[in-house]
Amino acid sequence: TKRGDKRVGLQKMLSKLCGAAVVVAAVVSPVDAFAPGSVLPGSVARAGARSGISPMMAAEAKIRLGTRGSPLALAQAYETRKRLAEAFPDELGKEGEHVQINIINTSGDMKLDKALSEIGGKGLFTKELDVALLTNEVDFCVHSMKDVPTFLPDGTHLETMLPREDTRDAFISPKYDSIEALPDGAVIGSASLRRQAQILAVNPGIKCVNFRGNVQTRLRKLDDEVVDATLLALAGLKRMSMTDCITKTLDWDEMLPAVAQGAIGIQVRSDDEKTIKYIKALNHGETKTDVSCERSFLATLDGSCKTPIAAQARTKDGIMTLKGLVCSPDGTKMFRAEREGPVADFMAMGKDAGEEIRKEAGEQFFVDLQAYVQDIQAANTKPVKSG
Image (cartoon, rainbow, N blue to C red; front, side, top):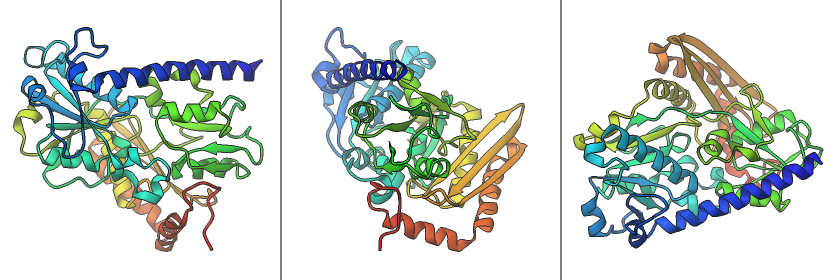
């Protein structure tokens, strides 16, 4: 049957993911990193924000990359290393063997029992990386741009963005074909207030629950019928070759993606000319301007993972189109703005769209929104105000 086929496909995907987890475990120790026949070549170390790195490993490296330790984060780190090797084979090695990858545990990775809106939003995935960069434990950090706050620590900046992946969200369910098909009382797992709000606007009869962790964890909960469905970023699934589990890809008019979704950004120390020389060579100009426009919109609205804000910009033939959205967490109120104009106006377009929504929604809406979010009970029920 169709549902049976979906469940078999999901089980196969989990098997594949478990294999990926073993690979990750195999490459994070200093000894394994240099063992002959390592599954993933090059040097890898696991570090806390101020943990030491093996002197032998540091001596081997010409440039040190900082990243989170999830399979997706590592896939992005290896993509970055591959591009560096292609751009500088003589200096960094044809396989990137002189690019050392350092895994840094972040607060967001360790506090998986709470919704991001409860524990601080986007910065939880970057603050330990910021410290490692500022204390010269790493030379640059590789980020999923949707996790990066709009304001970075002094002395650092985003130098480069790699070519963007597909920005859309993917609906995944072994039982149902779409969000609209979910019956009243069905449970959908998502820790994203942006996704929750847009889901509830389409189907207010379902229940959204907090659903965090890496892709393996989320798909395993889905297979165990903890929830009936979930949403994941298509970009991450593509980067890990896991698109077989997708039930439906959601276009922008069905689910407007997060600001900067699908983009990989590289953060450097602003005075580190040696590292900047390497990193700037990887920049994809169109991605950087599109994402910068979206982040301008976000900054104007003072948004983060604490607020249900979405925005996407796309450039074609020198003309940029921006779609922005802000909504109440229960999906009952939505405010949209669109802009189109010369790509040179990308920052102004984002700011102008954000100001339009602020004016239309009214400042009290944003005051209420912040109070609402602070009162959400770990996002483990359909959002309601406490009291």
